[in-house]
Image 1: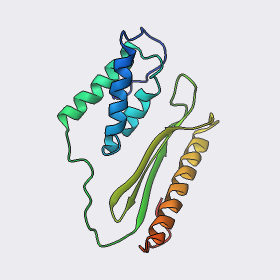
Image 2 (image 1 turned 90 degrees about the vertical axis):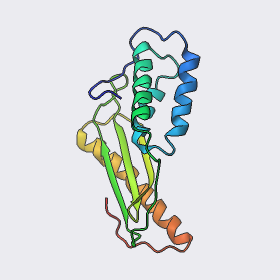
Image 3 (image 1 turned 30 degrees about the horizontal axis):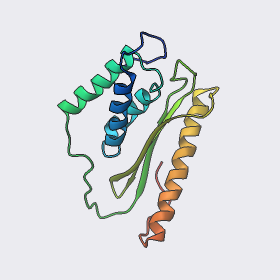
Image 4 (image 1 turned 135 degrees about the horizontal axis):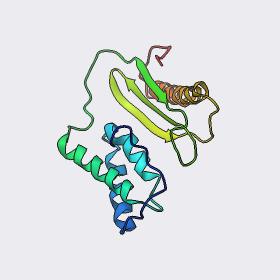
Length: 163
């Protein structure tokens, strides 16, 4: 998406909302192997019920980015360790429509990206600290789940994980 541009529900309706939905659905599918577009796709997905021309322009911007940076997708390498590392962040009142914050995280195992998420928080946060705390809580749950999953399949991971 274009930096510093915030989409809202306001604006002129897009003439072919079905086309918008099909394309955003395909972008959602592509985001499974392209974490670099996960946030942008999650933003344009919020407007599938009534897209505007601005929303379509954002989708076109994502397509231009993909054309210019096709990338190999996710590539895993052996880094000789199984350390779990997580990076999390959140904005505060990022959505002008409902005043909710957006959380996101990336979890790495052995230096390889294995899980990521970008999602609107369920409630309105009263401070940036509360918004960041909610993002950390979501991330901690994912770290614990990944740790238990790896232990279940016989891969020991050093604890504590890094957040």
